[in-house]
Image (cartoon, rainbow, N blue to C red; front, side, top):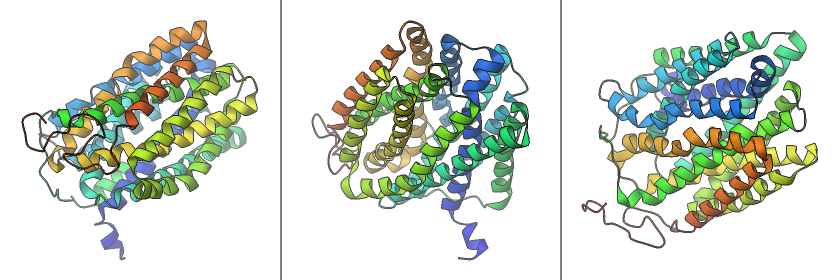
Length: 399
């Protein structure tokens, strides 16, 4: 394939944005726990508060559908990546409570709008039979970029002696540069189906909405408290956290493509069941872990289960109306972040009393998600959205 042909392949466009976002977010995330504790002076309640604020733009992601009235999805994705990069680049230069809240929100606006639009573009541009494998490859490449980011942070800080401020600035500027390149280097790709520019909520999508809500709640346990546990209970420094994330990403690089193929072969139902059974035991073990080696192993296993989220997305791609993709991607992000807005702050308060209770709450969430996953049919399609319960024929008012 010639260079000109590659620049006309939307899959390359999606890949570049995904790996750029992954690199920048990995830099931000791997530095956050130590930066917030040692530079800003955060405690458990503070870290829960800033993470709740970080999720507010995700809760408001449904507004993306209105912005698409005046801007094309492809351009919107590029602008969002640039905004995210700016927020990351500024983080280290504002080491205060107010400063960290401000840069976190700025970064989060770009991150969540990009993710909502990216999900829509992926559903639209990829054939259903190809989607699980390609999404697995995307996660694999994202993991590789995370590895590069973690190694880079370790080199910058431990070997070269760069400050946290400069490390954050480099991470953010990489995103801005990738967004600029994709703006200049790629054509505007056509849409096969014109997207609805209104909020779409359908009864026949209820199971997808429920799975999305629970996935958002589960994600907060890992993002907010898994790394925080390693820093506060086991005294992990920046180097230790970097190595931990590096190990998780290295394994994900090899496992994610396998997960994509597994979902394509075994189906979304089986993949979701495996995910939530595994997460139940991981969260239960987190609650009582006393050895840092065991906690590190749980952290890596927990991280690997994120690849299984492909099944949720391909489930909707199979049952959804092609014209609903942009609207549903935005609505799904809002649903995904309903719990995320209040849960980190609430669990941050619980953490101050009992860290174990936070992870037992996560085990309960995994058990409920398992029950929901049992309702995913073996062969989902429009009119066959659930294993048990009503299935609404496409086009009827009840949908």
